[in-house]
Every structure is written in structure tokens, then in C-alpha cells.
Length: 501
Image (tube, rainbow, N blue to C red):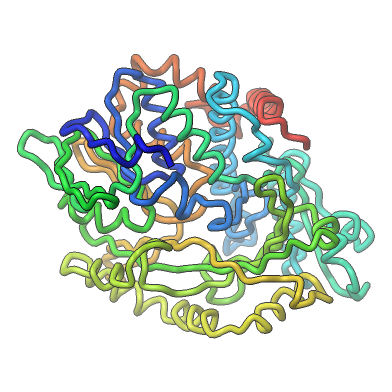
């Protein structure tokens, strides 16, 4: 741990303060510094290093979310057609991330892309006639889009055995199965990527980073700036810091901090914490037989982030398999948070939203209770739906990150549970917060550009525009409508990120 990161005292005033040391803050700080190197920027992180919460490698699935395999992004409409609009949107957002990371490599700000991104086919796998028919229709519809060019579909057991030998072992030939395969998929270690960006900010910029510093409160000042109470957790020193612009990228703690700002846009928001667990295997015999990320359908009453998947993971050069997620419950808003986080988040402004969301999601509550009560043996039984002869001794249980699902005001139901990622910005564009979970880290660059569009629109489309197009060549254009541009940016990022599809 660098001495300078724990003993320095923050200045009383900054142009920009970013709260949290995850991928969102690291991305936004890098973007802002590129646009204007003279900006005085500070990052406050309550733990001892970047990316220790949701961004950490084992705290998420490491899927470069491109909608290649996630079936919940392609719902079937009442008339039987498949809606791929959300899938196209998420695929485009991940292409933006890849372009930005490629720019960082081109500039020499980060190096060794294989440390954080590797090619890994993305597959959807379904069982039974009904789901096989849905997957076939989905494949046909997605194949019409340039973003999903090259996606393969098969119901043939021999073909599937080549794609996923571990899953097909000991399968009955009469079992109806269908799968799609997209070789453009990736496995991403967002923790390593974030720390690479953090190192660049520390060594090659004037961005100031303060570890073990926690922002406890945000208050508006009469002149339109913000005043924050910052606690140095090592020396128990407290001080006040002012900023013209504040970004709250504090994961689960974004909600209470946003609430403390008293902006009108934060009213009615509540949070529902959901933890997760993975079954993980480091048995290399098994790993060699499964070189893909394979997603299937969510079970009835399960939330979208609980879609079962069996994935190849590549972390610090080591390959492993991951199966899950299994949902858990904790009243903490962060993995290293407090059990009082949930009760202390309840207030008169969000009580109706929280109650409404709970009342209309009783099946979800029941699902969570059942998940929490599961033994390891019961989890292995679920795994055996994927791997027929899975052995308990080959797998260990690993706790994933803590997520806080957004609860929003809803006129009809009082409150509504949201499963996406949302940016909340005040009217003046001087404070912004990121709430929610999936697809999260994969779309960090898009999300942070969204923050800049809402908070610095004149600069982004004025003096910053040329630099923006250097960082993200496809910015402002819909890739789905431009096949040549899609091929161009994919070839560019493939070369820079050393991908092997």
C-alpha cells in the first residue's frame, strides 16, 4: 500500500469528486482527465485498494455482456415474435467499452490486455421442445442483425458434444436440447482492468486518489456546489471537502449517499440487497472440457440476475469453472458493509416504494428464502442439470459480491423492483449517481458517457468531441445500422485487445 495514498490530506476544494474505487469511477476519472487534464479530480475509496467490492473478479461472473447468450434480453412477445432491441443496445454498449479499452492500450496507459480480457465463446443452452423452438426463433431473428453475425444454432447432439463436451457427457440421445454459439464472446476480469486504470491515474495524471477515505454525507451549498464529510478510516480524522461536481459510484452505498444529497430526483428510491454464491472448480480436467460461458433460462419466480450459467473464468492467468449464481440475502449494502445498511436506508420518502415492491414480489421473497436455505449438496444437484456426473469434492462454494437492486416509485403498485443499471442526475447536472446491477461493469464506458451527456452536454458535443471520437470512434452512430462500421470497430478492438475469435 502506497504511503501517499493513506497519509495525504485532501484539499478543501476540487472540481470533481468521485466516490468509490470501482470500474465506474475509474472509467469516469480517466475520461474526464483525457478531456481536460487541468481538472482537479479526487477519488475517495473506503477500502484499501481499487475494485474490492462488485468489480472484484470473483464478485461478478466476468461476462463481457454482449447479449450473445443472455436470454432475458430477448423476450418473446405475445404474438410469438422475438424482441431483440434490448440485446442490440447492450451489444453496442459493450462495443463502446472495447473501443475505449483499445484506446487506453494504444496510448500506453494500460498494457497486457490478456490480464483482463480473453476470448471465450458465449452460448445459450435450453432443454425441451418449447424452449428449443424459442431459441430457434431467437437465432433467426438475431441473425438478421449485423451485431450477431456468425451466431450458430444446433440441436444436433454430435455438434453440441464438440461445443460443450462436459455438459453433453452421459446425456440421453433422446433428450431435446438446443444451443446457440457466438465465438465473439469474452471473459473479463473487471478488477484487474480497474486497477490498471487506477495505476495510470496515480502515476500519469494529476487525479488524487485517497484510499481508506469514506464519504459519509453530501450536502448542497447555496452557491450550487457540494460539501462532503470525509472520514480518514486509518487516522479517524474527519474533514469537509467541497466540489463543483460529484459522482457517486459507491455500489450499494450509492443509495444512502444519494439520499443524503436531498435532490428531488432521489425521492422514492429504495434498495433491496441481494448477495450471491458460486460453485467453483479448479479441477483442470473439467476445465479442459468446458471452454465457454453457457447460459440457460431462469427458473420460475427467479430474478433475471439468477439465470443459471456454467462459465469458463480466466483470473490471473488461471482457468477455472464457475456455476451459479445462487441467491443469498444479507441486510448489508456492500460485502464489507454493515448489517444496519438496509434498516437505516428506510425513510418516509421511500417506505411506500419498499412496501409496494415487497408486496408485489412475494414469490421472489419465497425464492430467496429457498435459495438461502440450500445445502451444498442441493446446489450440486442443480449443477447436475448441466454436468450429469458432477462430484461434490470437485467444487467449492464462493461468496460473490453484494448487489442492491433498485426499488422505484410506482403510481400503481407503490414501488417497483428494477433489475437494470440506472443513472440518476439532478436538474443542474452537478451530481450523478449510478444505481443497480447487471449488465453493470460491461457497459461502464457507455454509462459514464451517459453521465457526461447529462452533466456536461455542451463540452461533450463541443470542445471534447474530437477527443471523444478518438476514444470511441463509433460514438453517436448506431452500429446495428452500419455493418461496415461494426466490422471496422470490431477488427480494431480485436487487434488491440489481442482477442482470438
